[in-house]
Length: 254
Length: 351
View 1 (cartoon, rainbow over the protein chains, first blue to last red):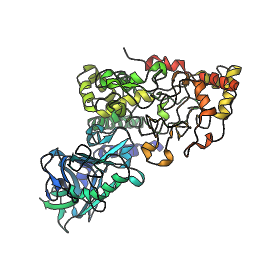
View 2: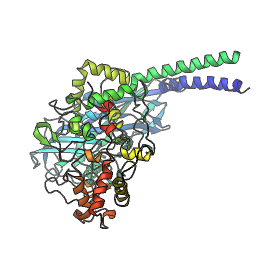
View 3: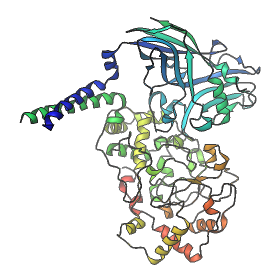
View 4: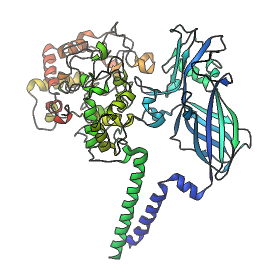
């Protein structure tokens, strides 16, 4: 008697295993989804970021050029009539010198969305869980080998105001405690602008302005702080600044 | 009979689903699903459970262990080929650097700390004397990339490994495909280093009822229990905590210990309590190897402790050990030498 009961349960479990293997497929069967493409455009005071070749001026009149500009974006989601969950395990290393890294796509359920939100940085769990792969590979030059943890954002360059051989390096990290630099970013989309329906493709262009790193709320002067490369109060201060560098430039639906 | 046939068919479907599932996972992250000749990590009798389940995602296998062993002894992990992990972690010295206060690295450089013995690492929640490394898989990144140790970078190491067909075969055996990446290299090393378990010293044999302490060793054990055990807790002979044991600051190295990691003043001059297992083999002692003999280590605790704001509270009370007790304590400490560990052919340089 018991066996007769167990057998169909077994069968159902098998069905469940077969379908649950592939979330994309099962989503396609039971709901309607569209594709969202997120593109980051890095700028300085609204002008294109030209690595190594352009000299900019910060709000303290200090000149600087940028050689490296990189940051981690994690678990990008939309909010609106529904919450569209991208795989929360998904991290993207946005690297100005690698064009392919500036965009990524994910799927969202049908609906109208009015904000996009993501983590700027790498969640503490991934800082303490051993060797990772892909964009979180420690060989990506965004991981501290001497004090385990990710560099969440990095800007390096040159400045005549730097007493450190005219070099400046900001390697901003720290995932725990009062000096955590992890930032939850939420950006409004123009109301009713992002509409997802079955098979649609929408693109959200997010601008990141490096000028935000220098001020508001904390003044960061190259003459005083040309190197911020450890977790601590200075890293926290600069992260409070750069968390305000994002704005949505455009949303388009196709 | 019918029931049996139906059940068999269903078992067949289950197995098939498992295969489909397994092969699909192989495409994305083979290391999570591929199991080749699995090894069981045995917790020795009386030892605690592992504080972190370090083999949960990194399944321990014979092929993974052997790959890690080969990597551990391979100089190609260093810039000039001269500094394998084993150059500072010598098996005969219980995987510490014998007779060196500081170890030697690339281009005639010195390290800034005494190379710790790799003993029962699987029970450590963090690594390095200041606890800077939070996972065994991440540990090799530090020595490989430090300019005063192996002075290499990971991409360059991986390029060298990919050129060696033996490694291509071994990575496939360990992880299911020929992909060679940093995660697989680090996980293989973690399998080898995590397997370096020492639990077969005379002390262990006495605890198992197989041998007896001599009267001097027995007395030394008594001295140990009343003076050392708070920090060097049995059976690991460390509690893996960070403590200031009263060593004066070395003005040249200026090593502030745990404070370097936490940024807290309360952590100034605190270093991780090392295990006493195989202690007779791992000289010199302390985080910077400043003391060369066990007698002088005990002498430090008798008379050398420098009082400071972060001195550990258990050391503020004066430790009184007579000369006889000092001798017997050393006798006892020598019972922690595990010859089967330092001579285990599975841990030695592969041919």
